[in-house]
Image (cartoon, rainbow, N blue to C red; front, side):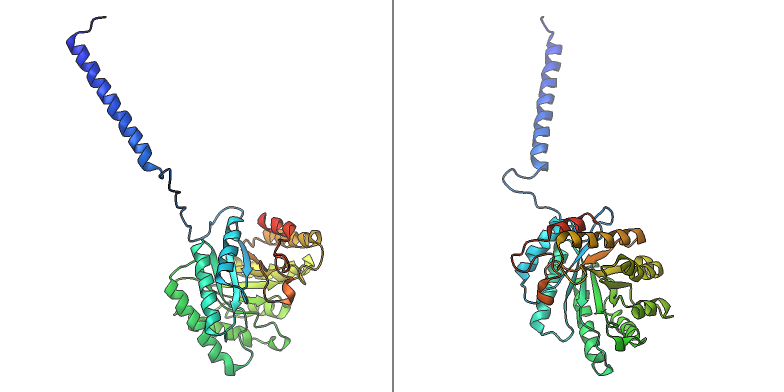
Length: 320
């Protein structure tokens, strides 16, 4: 069919416009995606997710003879497995500076890999007043360092099981913790401050009944180790009811370590996890991933001999 000059001109303009749009679209697709020869850099999430089944899945790490390289590898393995929180059970208040430097680096590495980090003191506080100043000064030093990091995903733990020994059944250890928290609070304002108490009756009852409550502490953790589910629930339930979201389980483990078969250990851990879920305790930290310190490493998910996992327990924890 013969076209008029006007129609031919309009068709030519339309073709030019179509070609221009196609070129623009192709260029847009090429420039909005990563280069085919350069891998895209994943976005690092600096705080853990707040929803989902693994939003509060935590584990203890303790490095006494380890290295930063080992910690990096362990943290990467835990992150890929769905863990979002770590508790660094690694700092004694009178430790040498070289040890403190390693543990601080581990904490920063954990933050960089996207974990929420409990960092602080695994020993004490001391039983006598003559060492209170030295202990408090050590906590203050960590508070100043933590503040300099400036990351709210770093929680400062100012002590661990001060009430553990029978001679500490009085109110004195709790008063000491509250004094230390009051001294540290002005120094650490970015994140939370907490303390891990013991599962003994007198410790639990004291924190519940003291009119001072938690004082300047933001939260209270509980280290609990009972193979008997009734005893486990008896320890956790009153603190969960009293403090609600301000309470977490800082340690739960295989009572006595991995001495039984994995099927028995898995059943024990499963009972603990079911109790915590029923009580509404979402934040909990298994003790521990790699055990370099205590009792021939029998508390670690990694076997001390060949480094293999206690796989059934590992799998059960990941479905918590």
